Image (cartoon, rainbow, N blue to C red; front, side, top):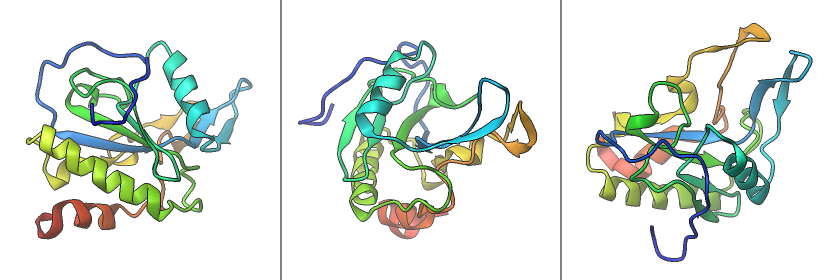
Length: 176
């Protein structure tokens, strides 16, 4: 755990049994189905509130969360599985960005700078991750919403997320 970061308790799948070769970038906001089985959009919310919700969830977990101001909080240790994306959790690190994920909510420079710094550290600790292994949640979860089958289940982190810029800053000329 990098110096100055506090570990919070959240769901974990136990120790890893395979090397990490992916980082999945998420946003806290996005589509879901409400209690009446209608599609709704949940806003990104606040850091502490999101950490509480994820920490209380019995089957979901993340490794890192980054607030809009660049504050980075640790959750499940990287040495353990955090269930955050179908089929890929055992081989990946989860990074949540506080954002609505709607393609309109901007990602502030402080948040992107903190993400780039975090990714540099993740890559040092997990040498099997290549640029093609740093993906958006929407790149790997192609499912559809049960309450609106014509709509994607996961669209985060959304079109406002500067994925190409992040990859260039982390990998330089080695980007796919």
